[in-house]
Length: 184
Image (cartoon, rainbow, N blue to C red; front, top):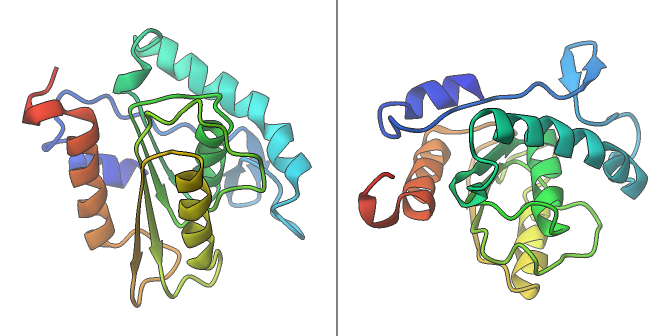
């Protein structure tokens, strides 16, 4: 996520970018939950909620946004998108915006508590890790609960962030977090 943040820095000069490492070790770095076998087991997602809320809560407090969640955006890829979508969908976090790259919404009831959080789902049609249909289903479930959702599935893109998707996300953040183009 840090390369993406670096590319956005000039467009969002007053933004604080933080890319927390997932709390659990993995042979190639860190993970939010174990990906062996069926990764959508609800108990895996439920088990990581406290860790997610602790990690994100500490960052929000440290960066001075404890009472300004409307100025916070979650931007996640794959597992990061999954846990971020879960946090908003369950109503635990009501924030200024959420961008999900190649994510999915876990099989949890969707709360309307975070209906003021605009959500952008970006997915590659050629994703072999998490099929693009997962974002289509997430958009339908979130929209049915009254949340504001935009969905874009990009042809020929796999499990990655394309230049086009990054630009779409940046535009979405400007629209969602920077009212009338004026930064606070």
